[in-house]
Length: 68
Image (cartoon, rainbow, N blue to C red; front, side, top):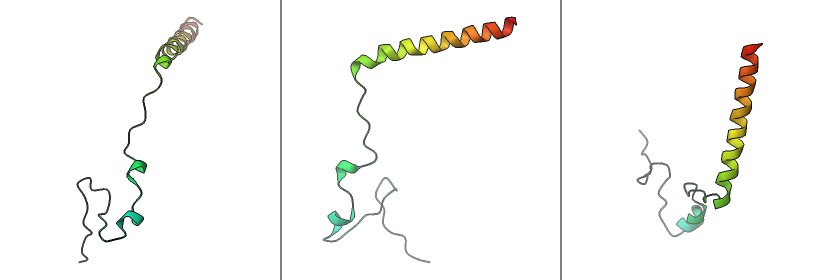
């Protein structure tokens, strides 16, 4: 059997050893596991209003279809 490469605790990347390790791996600021920044504070209310409008339209369409 072939020898498996050594992996770190996350089990999704290969541990690179040697002098050129920084040239092989991307810098930490490009880590794909970095969470996205939170949306601005003023976006929650308009989103809630839009959701209520969509739900109200769906209810009106459903009631209209049920009475026809």
